[in-house]
Length: 70
Image (tube, rainbow, N blue to C red):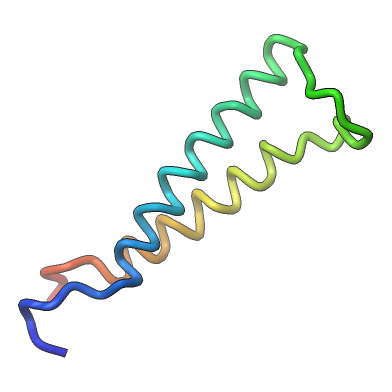
């Protein structure tokens, strides 16, 4: 790959990081305020787990494929 090209995985990592941060912050807000969503398995706190997973995966891709990395 040429030096001037940016990998698509970098952009996927950035998007996963943004979405993960948004979902994780919503899940933490649910825990703090006690306003749980009206779903069957609300006690499992899925936004916290999925948000954290997406955030970590996004950070991995964004850092692994960042442009200008030597």
